[in-house]
Length: 124
Image 1 (cartoon, rainbow, N blue to C red):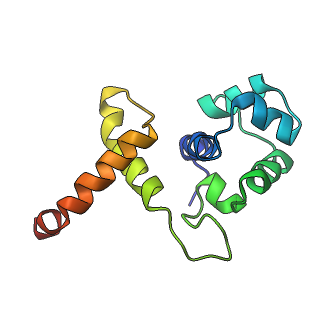
Image 2 (cartoon, one colour; image 1 turned 30 degrees about the horizontal axis):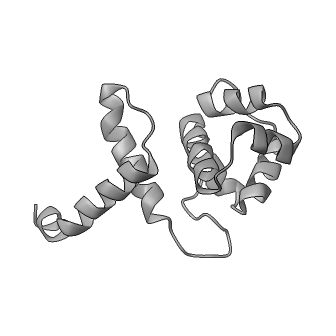
């Protein structure tokens, strides 16, 4: 599995939202500028390994998860993030329309729709 800048950027956006953190907050936390964070989020720049490690530490996730090499947020836990999986699936569907980011409310709505229609979906 190769490094996926889109997955990294998207996971960083979701983590920042989950932690209610702005670009400036994250920049201060890891010792960089908010412009640099903006470039990470847009996929225009790939962070150095030491920066990736600081970002992973800030959000208490594994580096593999952050880089999109694993779907496990924490290397020691087997727990998967259902919301992120649904968001990534929906993101790939919505990418056809140019929408590359889903809000927490949109993720929750999609999750509820999928759960409510699970039997129908699995029977298809």
